[in-house]
Length: 330
Image (cartoon, rainbow, N blue to C red; front, side, top):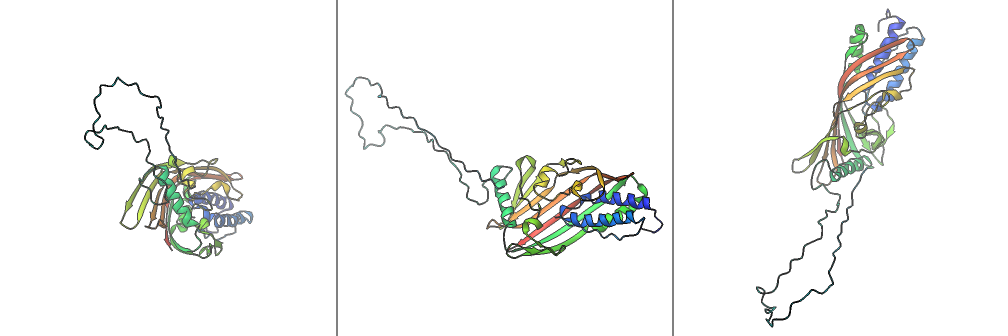
Protein backbone atom coordinates (compact mmCIF):
# COMPACT_ATOMS: atom_id res chain seq x y z
CA UNK A 1 0.00 0.00 0.00
CA UNK A 2 1.27 3.49 -0.76
CA UNK A 3 2.92 5.42 2.04
CA UNK A 4 0.33 8.18 1.75
CA UNK A 5 -2.45 5.92 3.04
CA UNK A 6 -3.23 6.90 6.61
CA UNK A 7 -3.37 4.73 9.69
CA UNK A 8 -7.17 4.53 9.73
CA UNK A 9 -7.29 3.28 6.13
CA UNK A 10 -4.67 0.68 6.88
CA UNK A 11 -6.78 -0.63 9.76
CA UNK A 12 -9.92 -0.85 7.61
CA UNK A 13 -8.12 -2.71 4.85
CA UNK A 14 -6.72 -5.13 7.42
CA UNK A 15 -10.19 -5.90 8.72
CA UNK A 16 -11.71 -6.44 5.29
CA UNK A 17 -8.82 -8.64 4.20
CA UNK A 18 -9.49 -10.76 7.28
CA UNK A 19 -13.10 -11.14 6.18
CA UNK A 20 -12.05 -12.07 2.66
CA UNK A 21 -9.80 -14.78 3.93
CA UNK A 22 -12.79 -16.58 5.51
CA UNK A 23 -13.02 -18.77 2.43
CA UNK A 24 -9.55 -20.20 2.86
CA UNK A 25 -9.30 -23.78 4.05
CA UNK A 26 -8.69 -24.75 7.64
CA UNK A 27 -5.13 -25.89 7.10
CA UNK A 28 -4.11 -22.30 6.26
CA UNK A 29 -5.13 -20.86 9.62
CA UNK A 30 -1.62 -20.64 11.02
CA UNK A 31 -0.20 -18.79 8.04
CA UNK A 32 -3.25 -16.51 8.00
CA UNK A 33 -2.80 -15.70 11.66
CA UNK A 34 0.85 -14.79 11.02
CA UNK A 35 -0.23 -12.43 8.28
CA UNK A 36 -2.72 -10.77 10.61
CA UNK A 37 -0.06 -10.37 13.25
CA UNK A 38 1.99 -8.54 10.66
CA UNK A 39 -0.95 -6.26 9.91
CA UNK A 40 -1.43 -5.68 13.62
CA UNK A 41 2.19 -4.55 13.82
CA UNK A 42 1.35 -2.02 11.13
CA UNK A 43 -1.42 -0.59 13.28
CA UNK A 44 0.74 -0.35 16.40
CA UNK A 45 3.64 1.38 14.60
CA UNK A 46 1.39 4.04 13.03
CA UNK A 47 1.46 2.88 9.44
CA UNK A 48 4.74 1.06 8.79
CA UNK A 49 4.39 -1.02 5.63
CA UNK A 50 4.49 -4.78 6.11
CA UNK A 51 4.40 -6.83 2.89
CA UNK A 52 1.72 -9.44 3.06
CA UNK A 53 2.25 -12.64 1.16
CA UNK A 54 -0.76 -14.74 2.11
CA UNK A 55 -0.72 -18.35 1.25
CA UNK A 56 -3.51 -20.84 1.57
CA UNK A 57 -3.95 -24.54 1.66
CA UNK A 58 -6.98 -26.61 1.84
CA UNK A 59 -6.72 -28.68 3.77
CA UNK A 60 -17.57 -44.21 11.28
CA UNK A 61 -17.74 -46.99 9.74
CA UNK A 62 -20.91 -48.75 10.60
CA UNK A 63 -21.44 -52.20 9.17
CA UNK A 64 -24.88 -53.36 10.11
CA UNK A 65 -24.99 -57.02 11.04
CA UNK A 66 -28.53 -58.19 10.58
CA UNK A 67 -29.55 -61.56 12.07
CA UNK A 68 -33.08 -62.53 11.42
CA UNK A 69 -34.93 -65.65 12.47
CA UNK A 70 -38.44 -67.05 12.76
CA UNK A 71 -40.21 -69.45 15.07
CA UNK A 72 -42.25 -72.26 13.54
CA UNK A 73 -45.20 -73.32 15.66
CA UNK A 74 -46.15 -76.96 15.19
CA UNK A 75 -49.66 -78.07 16.03
CA UNK A 76 -49.29 -81.26 18.04
CA UNK A 77 -52.99 -81.88 18.56
CA UNK A 78 -54.29 -84.91 16.64
CA UNK A 79 -56.57 -84.05 13.80
CA UNK A 80 -60.15 -85.21 13.90
CA UNK A 81 -60.76 -88.15 11.61
CA UNK A 82 -63.81 -89.46 9.83
CA UNK A 83 -64.77 -93.13 10.13
CA UNK A 84 -62.87 -95.32 7.76
CA UNK A 85 -64.57 -96.12 4.48
CA UNK A 86 -62.00 -98.85 3.71
CA UNK A 87 -60.75 -96.98 0.66
CA UNK A 88 -57.09 -97.96 0.22
CA UNK A 89 -54.57 -95.18 -0.02
CA UNK A 90 -52.68 -94.84 -3.29
CA UNK A 91 -49.29 -96.51 -3.38
CA UNK A 92 -46.59 -94.26 -2.00
CA UNK A 93 -44.38 -95.24 -4.86
CA UNK A 94 -46.72 -93.48 -7.28
CA UNK A 95 -45.61 -89.79 -7.26
CA UNK A 96 -48.65 -88.68 -9.19
CA UNK A 97 -51.06 -90.01 -6.63
CA UNK A 98 -49.06 -89.15 -3.49
CA UNK A 99 -50.60 -86.39 -1.34
CA UNK A 100 -48.91 -83.02 -1.77
CA UNK A 101 -48.16 -80.91 1.28
CA UNK A 102 -47.01 -77.29 0.76
CA UNK A 103 -44.84 -75.90 3.54
CA UNK A 104 -44.15 -72.14 3.42
CA UNK A 105 -40.47 -71.15 3.44
CA UNK A 106 -40.06 -68.96 6.51
CA UNK A 107 -36.28 -68.57 6.20
CA UNK A 108 -35.44 -64.94 5.33
CA UNK A 109 -32.81 -64.09 2.75
CA UNK A 110 -30.09 -62.09 4.49
CA UNK A 111 -27.14 -60.51 2.71
CA UNK A 112 -24.18 -60.74 5.04
CA UNK A 113 -21.64 -57.89 4.90
CA UNK A 114 -18.49 -59.02 3.16
CA UNK A 115 -16.52 -55.77 2.94
CA UNK A 116 -16.94 -55.64 -0.82
CA UNK A 117 -18.84 -53.14 -2.96
CA UNK A 118 -22.49 -52.68 -2.00
CA UNK A 119 -25.06 -54.69 -3.95
CA UNK A 120 -27.27 -51.62 -4.36
CA UNK A 121 -25.79 -48.15 -4.71
CA UNK A 122 -27.67 -45.28 -3.13
CA UNK A 123 -28.15 -43.27 0.01
CA UNK A 124 -28.42 -46.34 2.22
CA UNK A 125 -26.47 -47.63 5.25
CA UNK A 126 -24.59 -50.26 3.26
CA UNK A 127 -23.26 -47.82 0.67
CA UNK A 128 -22.36 -45.14 3.21
CA UNK A 129 -20.54 -47.62 5.45
CA UNK A 130 -18.60 -48.92 2.44
CA UNK A 131 -17.51 -45.45 1.30
CA UNK A 132 -16.67 -44.18 4.78
CA UNK A 133 -14.59 -47.27 5.45
CA UNK A 134 -12.77 -47.03 2.11
CA UNK A 135 -11.75 -43.39 2.58
CA UNK A 136 -10.71 -43.77 6.22
CA UNK A 137 -8.78 -46.96 5.51
CA UNK A 138 -6.77 -45.12 2.86
CA UNK A 139 -6.10 -42.19 5.21
CA UNK A 140 -4.77 -44.55 7.90
CA UNK A 141 -2.35 -46.49 5.71
CA UNK A 142 1.34 -46.30 6.53
CA UNK A 143 2.97 -46.30 3.10
CA UNK A 144 1.59 -44.66 -0.06
CA UNK A 145 1.86 -41.53 -2.18
CA UNK A 146 -0.84 -38.86 -2.46
CA UNK A 147 -0.78 -35.98 -4.93
CA UNK A 148 -3.01 -32.97 -4.28
CA UNK A 149 -4.20 -30.72 -7.11
CA UNK A 150 -5.86 -27.66 -5.63
CA UNK A 151 -7.73 -24.80 -7.28
CA UNK A 152 -8.92 -21.92 -5.09
CA UNK A 153 -11.04 -19.23 -6.72
CA UNK A 154 -12.18 -16.33 -4.53
CA UNK A 155 -13.50 -12.87 -5.27
CA UNK A 156 -14.93 -9.96 -3.29
CA UNK A 157 -18.09 -8.80 -5.00
CA UNK A 158 -18.98 -5.98 -2.62
CA UNK A 159 -17.44 -4.05 0.24
CA UNK A 160 -18.67 -1.50 2.75
CA UNK A 161 -15.70 0.60 1.66
CA UNK A 162 -16.02 0.58 -2.15
CA UNK A 163 -12.86 2.60 -2.67
CA UNK A 164 -10.80 -0.34 -1.47
CA UNK A 165 -12.58 -3.09 -3.43
CA UNK A 166 -9.84 -3.41 -6.04
CA UNK A 167 -7.14 -3.47 -3.36
CA UNK A 168 -8.85 -6.27 -1.47
CA UNK A 169 -9.49 -8.26 -4.62
CA UNK A 170 -5.81 -7.97 -5.45
CA UNK A 171 -4.86 -9.51 -2.12
CA UNK A 172 -7.44 -12.30 -2.37
CA UNK A 173 -6.59 -13.17 -5.95
CA UNK A 174 -2.94 -13.41 -4.93
CA UNK A 175 -3.89 -16.11 -2.46
CA UNK A 176 -5.99 -18.04 -4.96
CA UNK A 177 -4.77 -20.10 -7.88
CA UNK A 178 -3.79 -23.63 -8.88
CA UNK A 179 -1.21 -25.62 -6.91
CA UNK A 180 0.07 -29.21 -6.90
CA UNK A 181 1.74 -30.94 -3.95
CA UNK A 182 2.92 -34.53 -3.45
CA UNK A 183 3.02 -36.32 -0.09
CA UNK A 184 5.04 -39.51 0.24
CA UNK A 185 3.98 -41.37 3.39
CA UNK A 186 6.53 -43.73 4.91
CA UNK A 187 5.69 -45.48 8.18
CA UNK A 188 2.68 -43.21 8.51
CA UNK A 189 4.36 -39.83 7.99
CA UNK A 190 5.19 -37.47 5.14
CA UNK A 191 6.82 -34.06 4.90
CA UNK A 192 4.28 -31.35 4.18
CA UNK A 193 5.61 -29.63 1.01
CA UNK A 194 4.40 -26.23 2.23
CA UNK A 195 4.97 -26.30 5.97
CA UNK A 196 8.04 -28.56 5.93
CA UNK A 197 6.66 -30.41 8.93
CA UNK A 198 5.87 -34.10 9.46
CA UNK A 199 2.18 -34.91 8.98
CA UNK A 200 0.00 -38.00 8.82
CA UNK A 201 -2.49 -38.64 6.02
CA UNK A 202 -5.32 -38.02 8.50
CA UNK A 203 -3.97 -34.47 8.84
CA UNK A 204 -3.07 -33.83 5.22
CA UNK A 205 -6.13 -35.33 3.51
CA UNK A 206 -9.45 -33.73 4.54
CA UNK A 207 -11.26 -33.57 6.81
CA UNK A 208 -8.23 -32.62 8.90
CA UNK A 209 -7.74 -34.97 11.89
CA UNK A 210 -11.32 -36.24 11.67
CA UNK A 211 -12.83 -39.43 10.31
CA UNK A 212 -14.49 -38.97 6.94
CA UNK A 213 -18.21 -39.40 7.66
CA UNK A 214 -20.95 -39.30 5.05
CA UNK A 215 -24.35 -39.04 6.79
CA UNK A 216 -27.63 -39.94 5.10
CA UNK A 217 -29.47 -36.84 6.34
CA UNK A 218 -26.94 -34.57 4.65
CA UNK A 219 -26.94 -36.18 1.20
CA UNK A 220 -28.98 -34.85 -1.71
CA UNK A 221 -27.95 -37.61 -4.14
CA UNK A 222 -25.56 -40.56 -4.45
CA UNK A 223 -24.82 -42.27 -7.76
CA UNK A 224 -22.05 -44.37 -9.30
CA UNK A 225 -20.40 -45.03 -12.65
CA UNK A 226 -17.86 -47.66 -13.71
CA UNK A 227 -15.28 -47.86 -16.47
CA UNK A 228 -14.97 -51.63 -16.12
CA UNK A 229 -12.03 -51.36 -13.74
CA UNK A 230 -12.73 -48.54 -11.30
CA UNK A 231 -16.02 -47.36 -9.83
CA UNK A 232 -16.63 -43.69 -9.07
CA UNK A 233 -19.23 -42.75 -6.46
CA UNK A 234 -20.58 -39.19 -6.75
CA UNK A 235 -22.14 -37.64 -3.68
CA UNK A 236 -23.89 -34.25 -3.65
CA UNK A 237 -24.42 -32.75 -0.21
CA UNK A 238 -27.47 -30.76 0.79
CA UNK A 239 -27.12 -26.95 1.05
CA UNK A 240 -26.08 -25.61 4.44
CA UNK A 241 -25.44 -22.20 5.98
CA UNK A 242 -23.37 -20.85 8.84
CA UNK A 243 -23.49 -18.02 11.34
CA UNK A 244 -20.93 -16.47 13.64
CA UNK A 245 -22.23 -18.76 16.42
CA UNK A 246 -22.29 -21.90 14.21
CA UNK A 247 -19.38 -21.42 11.87
CA UNK A 248 -18.94 -25.03 10.68
CA UNK A 249 -21.72 -26.67 8.60
CA UNK A 250 -22.53 -30.13 10.00
CA UNK A 251 -22.43 -32.29 6.87
CA UNK A 252 -19.80 -30.39 4.91
CA UNK A 253 -17.58 -30.26 7.99
CA UNK A 254 -17.75 -34.05 8.40
CA UNK A 255 -16.35 -34.70 4.91
CA UNK A 256 -14.09 -31.75 4.06
CA UNK A 257 -12.28 -28.76 5.56
CA UNK A 258 -14.41 -25.70 6.25
CA UNK A 259 -12.82 -22.49 7.51
CA UNK A 260 -13.87 -21.32 10.97
CA UNK A 261 -13.18 -17.59 11.14
CA UNK A 262 -14.17 -17.40 14.81
CA UNK A 263 -11.29 -19.60 16.01
CA UNK A 264 -8.47 -17.33 14.82
CA UNK A 265 -6.22 -16.00 17.56
CA UNK A 266 -6.26 -12.39 16.37
CA UNK A 267 -7.10 -9.01 17.94
CA UNK A 268 -10.17 -8.67 15.73
CA UNK A 269 -13.75 -9.13 16.88
CA UNK A 270 -15.64 -11.16 14.29
CA UNK A 271 -19.15 -9.77 14.09
CA UNK A 272 -20.52 -11.67 11.09
CA UNK A 273 -19.79 -14.95 9.32
CA UNK A 274 -22.90 -15.73 7.30
CA UNK A 275 -21.94 -18.12 4.51
CA UNK A 276 -23.99 -20.34 2.22
CA UNK A 277 -22.66 -23.75 1.17
CA UNK A 278 -24.79 -24.47 -1.89
CA UNK A 279 -23.99 -28.21 -1.82
CA UNK A 280 -20.51 -29.61 -2.31
CA UNK A 281 -19.80 -32.49 -4.70
CA UNK A 282 -17.57 -35.39 -3.62
CA UNK A 283 -16.22 -38.02 -6.03
CA UNK A 284 -14.64 -41.20 -4.62
CA UNK A 285 -13.01 -43.56 -7.12
CA UNK A 286 -12.38 -47.13 -5.91
CA UNK A 287 -10.46 -49.84 -7.77
CA UNK A 288 -11.27 -53.55 -8.10
CA UNK A 289 -9.40 -54.26 -4.86
CA UNK A 290 -11.59 -51.86 -2.88
CA UNK A 291 -8.91 -49.18 -2.57
CA UNK A 292 -9.48 -45.45 -3.02
CA UNK A 293 -7.40 -44.29 -5.98
CA UNK A 294 -8.88 -40.80 -6.31
CA UNK A 295 -10.73 -38.44 -3.99
CA UNK A 296 -12.20 -35.18 -5.28
CA UNK A 297 -14.22 -32.41 -3.67
CA UNK A 298 -15.62 -29.17 -5.02
CA UNK A 299 -17.08 -26.81 -2.46
CA UNK A 300 -18.78 -23.62 -3.70
CA UNK A 301 -19.82 -21.00 -1.17
CA UNK A 302 -20.77 -17.36 -0.86
CA UNK A 303 -21.72 -15.01 1.92
CA UNK A 304 -20.93 -12.01 4.08
CA UNK A 305 -18.24 -11.58 6.70
CA UNK A 306 -17.62 -8.68 9.04
CA UNK A 307 -15.35 -7.60 11.85
CA UNK A 308 -14.26 -4.65 13.91
CA UNK A 309 -11.20 -3.34 15.68
CA UNK A 310 -11.93 -0.59 18.16
CA UNK A 311 -14.16 1.95 16.49
CA UNK A 312 -13.37 0.70 12.99
CA UNK A 313 -15.55 -1.90 11.26
CA UNK A 314 -16.06 -3.30 7.80
CA UNK A 315 -18.18 -5.82 5.91
CA UNK A 316 -17.51 -7.68 2.68
CA UNK A 317 -19.47 -9.99 0.37
CA UNK A 318 -17.53 -12.86 -1.13
CA UNK A 319 -18.06 -15.82 -3.44
CA UNK A 320 -15.92 -18.57 -4.86
CA UNK A 321 -15.04 -22.23 -4.59
CA UNK A 322 -12.44 -24.75 -3.54
CA UNK A 323 -11.72 -27.57 -5.99
CA UNK A 324 -9.34 -30.24 -4.68
CA UNK A 325 -8.34 -33.66 -6.05
CA UNK A 326 -6.18 -36.28 -4.35
CA UNK A 327 -4.66 -39.00 -6.55
CA UNK A 328 -3.50 -42.04 -4.59
CA UNK A 329 -0.74 -44.45 -5.57
CA UNK A 330 0.04 -47.64 -3.65
